[in-house]
Image (cartoon, rainbow, N blue to C red; front, side, top):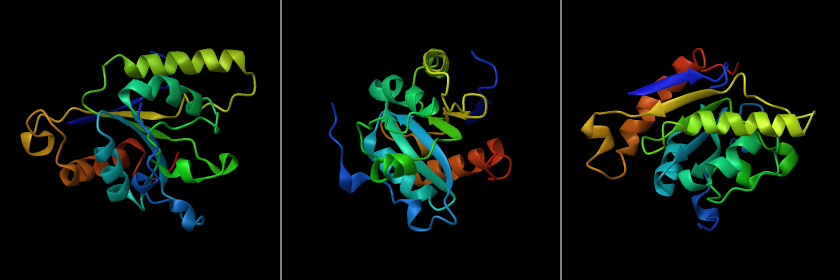
Length: 181
């Protein structure tokens, strides 16, 4: 099951242009709700990003090993943060047009303590930069840990189609019916 938590209380790959998720910036009047993902598999990130469009815009995807270097900076308002995977619509946008996610999906392999580590790093960045544009208080963390073997598989990547449907429902629930908060 995926659980949503609010962060209101503080608790080398090469970029692949061919793997980048479709950009919702092609229709700027109706962009999807910006989300980010952390996971162990690039291909799962690519497929999920494509399946969640147009309702959700995966702006950034990080592999677990890069998440602490990338995502706190993005959540603290650093729109120039590089992406090791190159997956997500921010990778194809100019820095000033990039979006900050309102929800963060954590794959099942993501260590339990990573949410707290990300938030701690955001606090540190905010302390260094007075004008930080933080979404720390409003970003929702959704952990995927579905015990359902039909979604997760046997020690490998999940069934992405089923996972996308599960996540779509959990994102809508966490974000209040799919509306940006």
